Every structure is written in structure tokens, then in C-alpha cells.
Length: 585
Image (tube, rainbow, N blue to C red):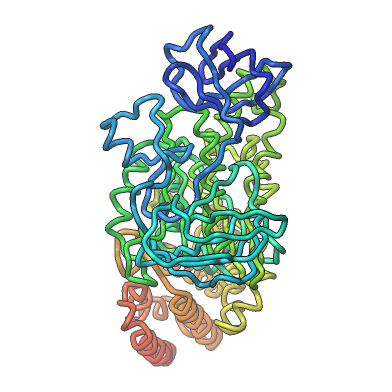
């Protein structure tokens, strides 16, 4: 037991803790506020407290738990909402009301609820860490696979089917090194240590988000890393909500890290009502929410990122595809800066700690496509996507620059596009994806080489439009050649009829890869046929004004079940109308 000698906001200094160690969780004061030891000097510890420290003073007692900050992993996490240190907010609300009471300590997993455990192994089977011994139908959208804790090697002595709580013994293992170990459906893991795996692979499958500008132009691979930087009001949260809603992953861990409370409220209100386009089930049935809003303790904000990615690694180890969406890492970095300042560490650029880049790397490098730790062959992936909120949209600031050195996909948001109501407001000229070479084989196999060729043509047309716009500003569009004016028109079609999507229209908020491929092909067919007609002397004005041009613009609003027929009709009519326009000329 130690005693407090100094309190500075969320930082508490206590002496008499010779029996404590670095990163140990401690209980502070009469209310037992949870904290974590950051530094040790002799028997004096600097502690970051995850709750409001008002009222604490010198002389208050501090107890060490002797264990690092850890999360509870097991059935019951899906459909739940936690704070930054994995306290279930719905249960806290039931006990303490609308405001979180200080010192309240509720287990992350419900100790009373029973789950039906179905064994997949039997007595006498050899087991090791990561092996699946049974399953639980946690939600209608996902089967929870109960795994052997890391470090356990031996033989199953007994295993029982039935209804159990997460702390009940479901199996007993005879350990290889001697003795027995009771296995439950719950395990714990320190949040700052990545969960182990056998092997990491190069990501080679795209994470399909249903957002055309992402999937076509700047795809992210399952197991990849991406950053979404942009100024205030440019749509970072809109993009991240879309990714959380529509991505073809098995589990989504959404971390609201230091953002406004109304944004998390939107998530909580929308997700239970939204249907997963793949399963038809509510999206909450495959979602874990971590809410640490801007008015909650700053120290817990720093921990929330690690809490979220540890939960994600647990589902990855079951063999699932998981996405972690952090909104935003800038607020997390601000929490690091505040704690670093209170620890009186030497500041780096703009006051951020010198270890900012390494901490960001520790987060993103826990992503990947891996072979899980198990005697069976099982693969899972963890995709990490972080929003960055640079002050004034200045991406030259430290958090943005450190992030860009780590991630392989950059979705640069543009406030100009957002103000023009173009969403997703991803700027196609300064965004990039470094996964295209890895994903080329998947695209060629599933969509054909023509899709990659069309993508390259679309990118080239958008770049040509940017160059032509400089000429137009000087001398006007009438000075352009018919071919260049057609390039401007095609680029407008790509921007408005293809890249722009409406998140509030059910038909357009999600677009499958097959649909994207056909829609882009129609636009480029129009461009190619018009170019041939212009080369033969056709009038560009007549080609642009044909009736099918408007139908192409409305094609993205065609219902999913009707689009193959509708697109075929557009293609047939387009060829006929372009031919007629050229002949009349």
C-alpha cells in the first residue's frame, strides 16, 4: 500500500509502492479509482488515473492489483458498448443513472448470463493455446469460438456441453508440465501487448466497403492499414460510419476516441436499425462499440485504442475478418501529449511526446492477415483504419505525418468537396493506395482484367481534367478541342455519376463490386464511342445531349435486383443513339 503525495489532474504521484511494477493497475483513494503506473522511481510511482480525480489529496491510499491493464474476452462483447477501460456503459447506466459514478467497477462480461456451450473436441484430445474447444451462438450473425488460453498445452481430461456462465468450468485440461487447468469461456489479456500468431501474410483480398471511390480507386486489403485525414466538417465520421456499416468483415470494433458525444449517439441510434447487406441481420450483432467521448477522462482516452485493438485481435484469432475503426487518433495523441506534459517529459514537435510515432506504429502494426496460433490451420485478418483530425486541415502536423509514414492507404478528405455536397469527400488527386499490386490477382480473377484497365482509364481522365481546368480558368472551355471537352464531360460523369454516393438513399449507400464494374464500364464505353464519333466528324454538343446520357447519370439509382438488365439496355441504346447523332451531323 502506498500514499498519494501529489495530484495533478489525471496524474497522481504516490510513494510506498515498492511492491508495484511498471504498467500495474492500481486502486486510488477511498473510492478505488482505477489507474495505471506510468513510471517508477524507487518506491515512488507516477499513476495515470482513468477517472476524475477531483477531491483526491495527499495521504490518500493507493493499492496495487499486481496485474497490468487487461480486458476480459469471451461471449457477451458483441452488441455491447464499453468505455475506454472496458466498463459496460449500459450496465453502469442501469446502476448509476445517466452520469457515470466515480469508482464504479462492473465486470466487462456479464457473470450471470448463461450461454449454451457446444464442444467441438472430446476428452483425450491434445490441445494447445489457440485451439478451439467449443462454440457459443453469441448472436444470430456470429458464432463465438471458445479458444484455449495462450500457454496452455496438454490433454483434455473432460469437456461438457450445457449452459454456463463465462466463469463456469466447461473443460478440464491435464497440463503437459503437470497439474490440471480448469478452462472457462472467458480469458483475459493485457491490452498493451499484441496477441501472438504463427505467421503474418501479405494482404491479398480487398475489404469491400460498398463505397465506389474507395473500392475502385483506393482499395484497402483485409489486414491492411488506412488513414482518413481531413479538416473539421470534411466528413471523416461519415466515411468511418459507412465503413463500419457496410464493410464485408465479420466483426467491427468502433472506437469513439475523444470525439463529440453526439457522434457516438448517432452510432448508437443508427446501428440497431441498420441491416447488414450480407446477412440481413442488424449491424449491432457483429459490432463492439467503445465510447470515450471528449468530455470523459483523458487518461481513459489513451487506453481506449489499446482496449479496442485487443478485442479485435481476439476475434481475429478465432479466424474472423475484423475491422478496427478509430475516431480519431488525433484526440488519442492529444491525450498522450497531456499526460507527457504532466510527467514533465521533454516535448517534441508541437508539444507531442518524442515517442508519438512509435506509439502510433505499435497500434497500426497490430493489424495484419495472419495464421492464427493453433494446431489447426486457421487464418484471420485485422484491418486498422484511423481518422486523423489535423488542426485547420494542416496535414504537415506531427500526427498526420507520423501516420502517413506507417499506413499504406491514404483517403485524403477535402472540405471543398464536402461543402459542395460531394460525399464521400475523398479527393481523388491526392489520395492513394499501396495495396494495388497485392490485390491485382484478386481483381483479375473476380472482376477480369478489364476492371483494372477501366480503373486506370478513370484515374487518367480525372488527372487530365485537373490539368485542363487550369487552361479553362485562363481562356475558357470553348477554346478546348472537342476531344478535350469530351474528357471534361467524362470526368464530370465519373465524379458525379460514379464517385459521388448518397448515404441516405438505400439503393446508393452500398454498391457491390459487380455493380461498380458494370457502371464504370458503361461510362467509359460512352467516352470511347463518343471519341470514335468525334474522330468521324460528329458534333460533340449532340453527343452530350442524347437521351441515354441522362439514363447513365441515373443508373446508380437502379434497384440492385434490376441493374444487370437496366445496364444492358443502356449499353444497347447508347450505341444506337450515338450512331444516330453522328449520322444527323
